Length: 387
Image (cartoon, rainbow, N blue to C red; front, side):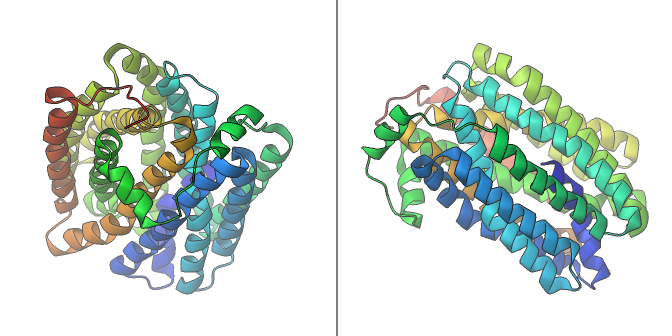
């Protein structure tokens, strides 16, 4: 996540140096997510079969290659190639979450996933800030640093990460028939009462959040009147601030809240807060109020993400955890295919406030949906294997 944070806020400005338009920038972001949509469920399923550690190692190698291409890019086509390669192997978030699930029980599941979320958050705290500083020496420099971090990650996995799947678990997983890597697996998951509801929330929540995330750099540049040169540093520092907030709520609060209130109520309550935060962001007039609005927004994102992941792991049998989290990551990637271009079209066609309003409307609909499915007509959690 540190390597990802180094380059994420700079990609729009990097693409601009090669003549990329806002639509091309949207397609660049989409290319990574489209590749991840394909790769994430495959990686999750393979980790169920061959173990978490070898799949993490292979996927981080792909990330290393992607960042190296990004550093050597001399045109838009190389930017696209680097993001597609990284996207196919970058869906390993589902494998990491499966690893945490292997080594935690249901009572501590949200806490464990919150800790890994906090680790990602701390990576994102340092990443944008360091990437902004390094970008003053050229946009290729943060990519070189990200490639070096991926290489160090491979060394860490090779020498220090034990396999989380025991021999007994492997034997149990081998008893269950495997479905093909097809859209049919996603369709079947969506038909299951509990899992289907959570995956639908993941998708529409993802569209709402990515509508904010994908135009944030351009929105900040427009709202604060920044040049592309100064915007990289400013956006990097603001995203580091968001990372601090998200890491705090995931590392400290989410585990305790989940034990006390349950994932159902957390999703519902913080979806309300998210909808208010997004519409407030859409019309924020200056930097000071922007920093204030980002507080509840960051808290909402941290709680909702962890709660969905935790609830999903409790809604399926152990033999399906990797696959289900892979489908979850795949749907999240699909939102990054659809939302960037949509939000940039809204940004250009209606105004800078339009993506925020669009995201707030989606979040508001999810408030009603989560109320109906989890509060008023609740599907209980934890659930039996039949779900």
